[in-house]
Each structure stands twice: as structure tokens, then as C-alpha cells.
Image (cartoon, rainbow, N blue to C red; front, top):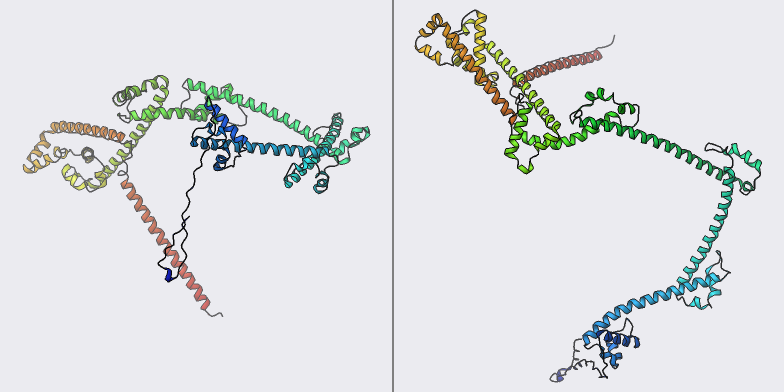
Length: 577
């Protein structure tokens, strides 16, 4: 605590100093020397110190200073050598003692409660209707009553005791009713006429005629109620039998489904059913199987659903194998002409180049799941065939558009001698020209010119078959070389024409092969957008014309409606005669 503040003094006494009182220092506890005891082990020292605390009646709530003051004169106080050991042991002993005292209090309280309940049980005047204040007056002199200090706890134990008496009495009544019920139910079961569908009004006269004591011991409501309980029990038995029959039926149906599934698995093993099998393709063959016929008209899963489940399971396995095959096939050339042997050889080559030896599994797939390898080949081949056919149709459309373009430009006899260079200048601004490769443009142009020449009954000049160079040479020489070729070199023209056609066809075939390979490497993306540009233009034109007609028709209808409204207005304004 802070030192006290000095009291105020008058000015005349300002020179006088007042010193605050000094605080006394705390005096240390001086241990009085006692005759030392001899201990042979640490356990003896601990036991001696423990007995000291118990003899001095030290409690778990005692303070250390008080313990030291009470015990320091005893020789056992020196059993533990240092003050730190004594304090540490006392703290541990105090914790243990606190638990022991708590347990003693609990046991004393339990003993007091048990004795209080015994006192209540020995009092024969207490029943389920006795009130606490009435019993309290009779029991207050008993030492077992006073041993329980808490008044509220006494009342709670008394109420619990009374409730237990009421419960036992109710149990006795229920036991008596149960005996009468069992006897009555045994009486009813002696009548085979009672079934799960019997009504009380039907069986009552027969029961009354018996005048059986088991029947007479029940009142009317109990008779009817217990009879209904028996009927309900019989109904439950009937329902259980029906459920059992249904269970047997379901088990039989399950056996049929399992047998059909085994039949399908057998066909999977034989390779008849694969991950790509369809129900419509397999139904006719499966209808001949006994397992299929056993499921005819059976509820639950149908044969088609079981088939699709099996195919789905195969598809899940196939998807894992397909991913590996797809990764290999992505790095190999595959066209619509690739055979299965070439496809398999290509997969082996890619696997040897791209996959580590410990991760390779193509050989295992070919050995254990060749059907998956072949199935993916069929998938790729079908896709490539479709791509090739689409390319051919697209190519045919482009060539037809280009042919129509040539027909629009060149259709007279004087057009026959036009060179490719001049024609290219006329045609290159059209989309039909841009949609073809240069080799195809020239080839189709020369073929068209030959066809036009045959149609017109004329011979095609050699200058018309070159790429423009011969035409320029012809203009430089005044056309004499062209005239000589027309009169005397028809054989050479034919030879040159065939050679040009062969070269053009080879270039076209190489271009087609390059185009197909490029399309396969780009994951078979559709490149027909440019091919259909003309068709889109025509569709746009037709839609525009249709819209214009619709708007024109709408304006005409609007004018007609306005005219009718004006006529109605004029009619209303016209005076009636």
C-alpha cells in the first residue's frame, strides 16, 4: 500500500517536517528445530509427511501459512528436506484430498438418500394419494429424516417414491387386464369361423351362446375391441403370407434376369455383343434364347434395359481403351482407304516412337480386347468414309458451279480459241473460281473447251490447251505457228492434249490426297463454309424477295383497311333518307 499522505499544516509551521511511519518488514517463519527422524527411503518420508497432515486435520482448503504454523513443531515436518518439496507435495496432496473429500460427501449423501427411501418404504400409511405436508409431520422425528439436510431434496424424493407406488399399482392393473385379455383371445381362437374378414356383428351371437366365463369377464367395449385386435392380427398374417408369395415371385424374376444377363455375358465373351451393339440389331437373335423367353411378360427391368446395361458396362471399359487408341491414332495418317492391318501397324509404330516401354499396352489390348481395337478402327473408318464422301459431294458442287460459270461466259463458237490466261482474267472475281485449286480450274476449263468444241463441231487449237505461254508466242509470230498446227500437226496436238490431261489429272490427285491428309490432321473439321457461300447468297436473295413481297402485301392490306375505314366514316356522315 502507498505511504499515508501527511496532513496539511499552517504556514507558520511550514518549516517543520513530518516523516511518514515506516512499514515493518515481514518476519520469516522460523522453523523450530525438532529432534530429527531417520528415514530409509523417499516413500517413508512421503508417508510420514502425509500422516502429519492427516493427524493435524489439514483440509483441502487450508492455506500454506496455516499448515506451516501448525506442523513445524512436529519432527515429521522435517521428513521433506526443503521448503520447495514441502510446498509441492502439499499442493499435490491438497488436490488429491479435495477429490477424496468430494467422494466422501457423495457417498454420505447417497447413504442419506437410501436411508430416507427405506424410511418411506417402511411407513405403511403412505400411498399414492398421500401429500408431502401430511407425511412430513409423521416423519420429522426420525433420524433418517434429519440426516438429509436439504428440504427440497426430501420433498423430491418423497414425490418420486409416491410416483413409483402409482406406477406399480398401474402395472398390477395392466397385468390383471392382460390375463383377462389372454383368456378372452384364447376363447376367440377356438372358433375357426373367425378369419381376417369376419365382422363383429356376424360372430357376436355365436359367442354369446357359449356363456363362457372368459367371455363374461369382459365388458361389451372390451369384447368388440379385442375381437378387432384379433382380426387385425389375422389380417397381418394374411398380408405376411401374401408378401412372402410376392417375395418368392420377385426372387424368381431376379433369377430370370440373372440368367438373361449371363446369356448376354456369354455373347460378350464370344464377341457377338460389343460396346457398339444396338438392340434393334440383336433382338431377333436374342428372341430365340430360353432366358429371353423366360422373361416374357415379366414386370420390372425389361430385356432391352438389361441389354443396354450390359452394353453400357462394355462402353465404360471401351472408353478407357478408346482413349489410349485415340491418342495413338492422332499421330498417324488414316484415310478411308486404310485397312485394319495398316491401322494396326501404324498404331504399333506410333506407340514405339511416342510411348515409354513400361507404359505400352497395345499388345495387351490386341490379345485380350481385340474387339475394342477393331471397334475403334470401324469408328475411324466410318468417320473417314463420311468425310471423304462429303468432300466428294462438296468437290462436285464446286465443280458444277465452276462449270455453270464457264457456261455463262463461253457458249459461242468464237469462244473456243480463248486461252486460259484470258479466261482466268474473266473468271477470277467469281467465288466459283476462288473455291477451286488452280490445277482443277485449268483442268475443268480445258475439258469444257474440248466439250464446247465437240458440241460446235470444231477442233480445239493447241493454243487453247496451254497456260498462256503458247498464246503469247502465237501473237508474237503473227499467228503462223497456229495455222500450221491446225493444218498439219493434228497428231501432235492430240499427243500434247493427252499429256496435258495426264499431268493435270496427276496434279489433281495429289491435291486431293494432300487435302484429305490435312483434313484428318485438323480433326476432320468441316471446311465447306466457302463451298456453300453461293448457296447462302441465293438463300439470302430468296429471303429478301420473300420479305419484299410480304411487305408489299402488308401495305396493300393496310391501304385496303384504311379505305374501308374511310368508307365507314363517310357512311356515318352521310344523312339518312
